[in-house]
Image 1 (cartoon, rainbow, N blue to C red):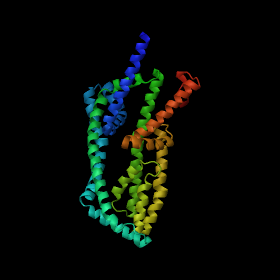
Image 2 (image 1 turned 90 degrees about the vertical axis):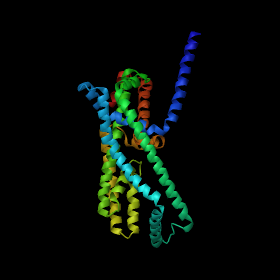
Image 3 (image 1 turned 60 degrees about the horizontal axis):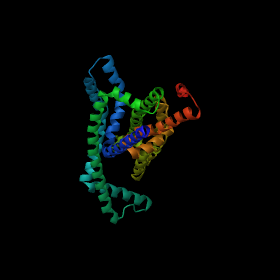
Image 4 (image 1 turned 180 degrees about the horizontal axis):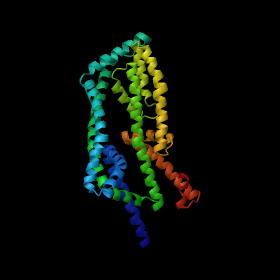
Length: 346
């Protein structure tokens, strides 16, 4: 009877924890980007936090405040400036949709002259204006959500830095593994998060800079703006930067700038695309032994689940799945001792 009660209490507690966890996750879904962003930045700053508190003997609150300022300067201010650039563009479209419609109509006229195909018919004009306005409002709502998540990120990051060591020990203790496996699991998580949190933005910046050079040479209007768009496009799997430079080359061709259009196509194919492949392989293999397929498929999984932060945590989810399958195979199918589970990963 006592054993039955113990089993009842154990599984009842598990059901309560699972139910409350689901409720918390559902209610925090609008702020999940801020929480995940705080976790990613914490992984990048945890060594500095340990150095300041253990080696320099700083108070944890002081060290956390200094690192919070560092995060704002190095991560959040540049990102906010990029968002502000988009806001100014979207505001112009929202406040004066007719100017955007004039540009679209001019483009449609050039397409009709070249191909004799009427891209825009008069009955579609009003619907396109409405669509542009709605897109502008949706983007501005997204900016508001970005601001709220930014505040959430700073709030969560501060307390993560304050209680980082206790938090890490607690997470390691509740993992369903012995101490050796748990340490390796945590190490794998840190490596994957660092690889994606540093590697993916670095790839985007490098490829955006390379694309900017090509845009300037080919005479693309607003080259800096399109280079920033290219940075974000590199995050998308498979197609990447081609989503930007191919349409730009098409527009240049419609404007009878055939030399610039052909030059941009050649530059995009030989330089932008190939540099993406080379840089991505070098950085991903150098920073963490993550297969490129895990990164690509992880982004496909993560973007619908986590939004923008899915570029970091999507590959993490897939890599941890592969990692846990590896542990299961080695321990329960191959019968390897715990001390030898990770011998093949060294």
